[in-house]
Amino acid sequence: MTEHPRGMARRLVAVTRGGGADPRGTDGALDVLTGPDRHERLTAVLHELVVATADMMLLRADTPVAEKAFVLDLRDEDGQPVVVDQLDPPVRALVRALLAELNGRPEDTDFQLSLALREDERYDPVDVLVLALLWTVGSIEWCEENDAPTPGWLV
Image (cartoon, rainbow, N blue to C red; front, side, top):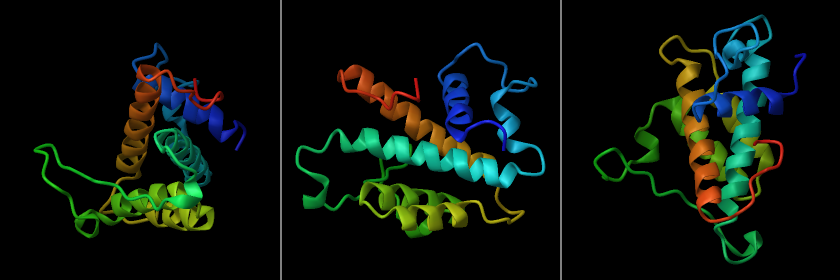
């Protein structure tokens, strides 16, 4: 891995937010999905995105983290509740990775990310990456709208 995962994550966020970078070029953001060490790089990038998203989400908490247990209220496009256990395994693991990070369990975060990226031809790791990017971008936008700080490395 030549580039730091935060640099790759930053480029992916820029492309997701409509930046001018070409995601397919030699300097493109999607190079995280190619090469012999792609699994290691993708895991590291996802970790950075999950940690950044959790950090931004924790800004919404009005008491110290130690006093709270965080849960996620997941909804589908129609606003109906989504049962985590009914999600595809990689998405379920990504949700649980975010919950682990929110609840101060970094070892569980890493374990869940390993499950999210487990090799299985039925699931595309791009789906997990896209979801993590959407969460991160949504959190950045919330921070911008509420004059809250974002991780300095991310923007």
